[in-house]
Structure formats: C-alpha cells, structure tokens
Image 1 (cartoon, rainbow, N blue to C red):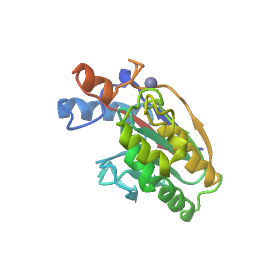
Image 2: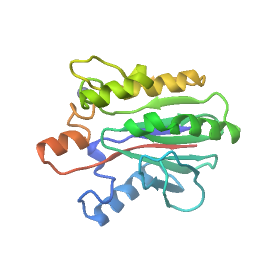
Image 3: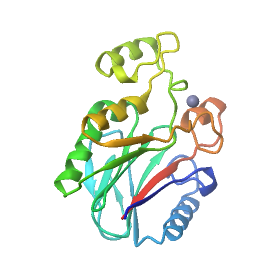
Length: 215
Ligand SMILES: [Zn+2]
C-alpha cells in the first residue's frame, strides 16, 4: 500500500543551493526519512526537464524532474516552492513529478505515466499538492496568450493573465485515464508553505517543501 506526504514549512527547508546551510538541509531530510521509516530517500536536481528516472538503492540525488520506483521502503521526493508536486500511486509502482510552467508544456507528466505503466503500474491515482494558484501565477500578457493557445485548460482571464497550472496538468492526467485530486492550498497565499514567488517579492529567505511517496 503506497503512502505519501506533502511537507509544510514546519518540516524545515528541504532544498539545497537556495541560501540555506547544507548541513541543516541534510538534517531536515534525515528527519523526514526517519519520520516515515524509509529505507532510503531519493531527491532530484530539478531543471524543468522532461527526464524520468528509476530510483533504487541507497539515498541518492538524480538529475531529472520525475522519479519512479517499484521498490518497497524507497522514498521519492519532489522539491517545490510554487511548482506542482505531483504524486502518483498504485499498488506496485509509485512516482513523483516536478511540473511548473515548463513541465506543464514539455510532456513530462505523460512520459512519467507511460513509464510507470511499462513497469506494471495499474490503476494509477494522482494527487497534486500545494502549489501556486490560478489567481497568483501571473505571467506577461504575451506569454499568457501564447501558452493558452496550446494549453487552453491553463486559461484564467485576459485581465489578470495568470495561468492555472493545476487545471492543465489535471487535464493531461485525466486524458490518460488517471483519477486526479488537486489539494488546492496556494503556496503564495499561505504562510504555512514556502513560496518562491512570495519570498522573491518580499525579499525573504527562500525555502522548499517536498511531496514524498513510497510503497
Ligand atoms: Zn494564490
């Protein structure tokens, strides 16, 4: 039976290379691994790519934006601070996907689902965790128009020209036959979560939370 957790600020910052002391980040990661009684916990160096990798063995860090595994006790973590943390579960394979604006557009969601099915995953269920909401993710009017031409589910309205990333990703998952729940909490509006955009605007310290999944 798969399990998952979306951390909040209370778990501490889990992201490296955003201004925090490395040893504190590693301590927070170790605390998370212990709290979930995992044999291993795997992270990603995320670059908004469409790369999917299979995690196994001891704690490691992969250069990719989606991880999958069919090994029990093997935790997979996706780091976010406004982007969508997507957890995919089944009885035999689990996965995490990092999807921001670029991930929404580059096909990583579909690629991950296809690879999970190749590994034998059946009856996959997806959960989209805390992320920036359709009112807060404003982009330039020009970018907005360009994107909604190809991704109409991301449209909100021309005046605020903000993108609804969760709606478009849910649409992609639904088209592949995946039942999808959107948890809905907005990272930018809710101080309980780290938010890249809020921290940048207020010139506050950055932080990242994770979605973590395991069999
Ligand atoms: Zn919001």
